[in-house]
Amino acid sequence: MADENMTNSTDDSKVLGDVAEFQEFDESSKRNSFGDDKLEMLKDLQLNVYIELGRTQMQIKDVLELERGYVIELDKLASEPVDIYVNNKKIAEGEVVVIDKHFGIRITNLNEPNSRLKGLI
Image (tube, rainbow, N blue to C red):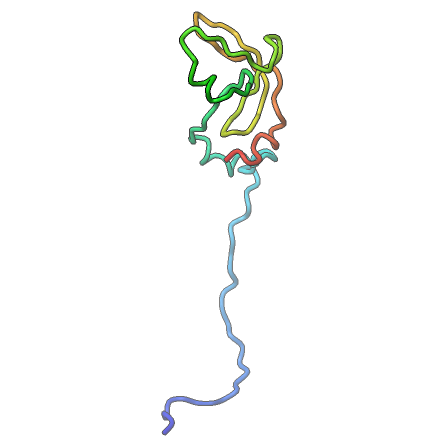
C-alpha cells in the first residue's frame, strides 16, 4: 500500500533562494611566478648537501690496503670547479676556499631556479 502523504506529481514549480555572495579575490597576496606561496611550507625542510671534489675507481684490494696518509688521486684538476649537490641533484658549481682553518665553497655557477627545484623534493 502506498503511503497517503507521498505524492507522485510532476510539479514544475521553481525553487526560490538567495543568490550566493562571494568575497572578491585579492590578487595582492599572489607571489612571483616561481610559486613561493606554494613552497612556503617546504622552506623549513632540511636537505642533504654535499660537495664533490672528484671521483676515482679503485679495486677492492686497494681499498682494503688504505692507510693513514694515503693519497687518492681524483679525476679533476685542482683548478676545476667542484660540484654542489642537494639530495643527489647537482644545483651549482663552486670553488674551495679556506675560512679560519675551515673549508668552505664559494658558489661560482648556479643552475636556473626551475631546474634546481625539479626533482629536488
